[in-house]
Image 1: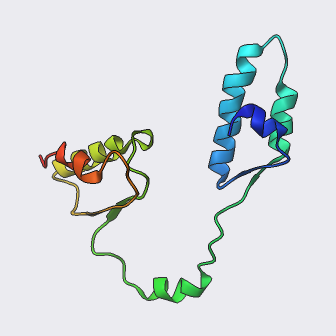
Image 2: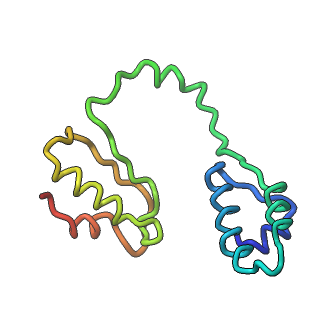
Image 3: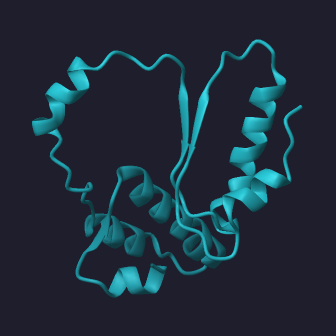
Length: 132
């Protein structure tokens, strides 16, 4: 979504309040601030008034008994559930794993690697990191 498209849309929907606020904040910084001679604050207010948060539609109430009856995991679980592409910065996640593995005070943990990949695979990234 870009600023002009959002302004011309009837409504702009985001899947979280965080993404909505981040988009409006970034749009303000990139579009309004550089053009101080033309006050676009009304555009910001206009976009804000027609932007809404529409959370993902998951009703987990039927599964509540499954969660309540389970005992807590024996160790923490770290999950990567994004695409394995550079724009998602998987190297940051792998650097975190490297730091955690290097710290003897960190308790044992499990790692779950998910997410589709086209050019970059989790194994390619993992091969570039060795256990300290």
